[in-house]
Length: 126
Image 1 (spheres, rainbow, N blue to C red):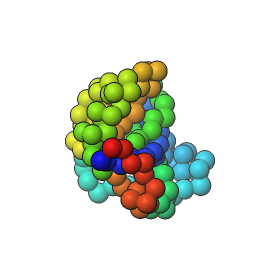
Image 2 (image 1 turned 90 degrees about the horizontal axis):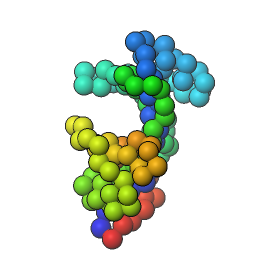
Image 3 (image 1 turned 135 degrees about the horizontal axis):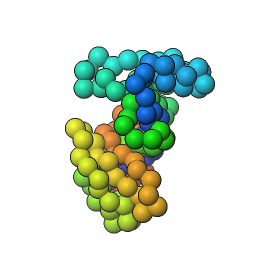
Image 4 (image 1 turned 60 degrees about the horizontal axis):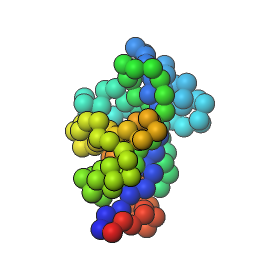
């Protein structure tokens, strides 16, 4: 048995100025920005949401801008296998998450659980 739920949204921006892109989304959504201390996360700026709310980040990418979603889980491999059985395909493994593609072409990520309400609200899969 494992659990999963919608974790949040990542706003992919094809830009050389991540801070300006993050400032736009911060103002548009009324959420403060938060930078990460880890150098491995230099291409990300978080938007400050409550622990039980959806996670939102602005990400610097080298492809055209889009929004993608994250599915958070307490068992990455079990969730990837569940989604593959539904027709998704694994694109790549990156650090602690997996990039996938839906049968309809949208890319999304399977990430470790992080929201405060995960244990109470996530779907249970046998």
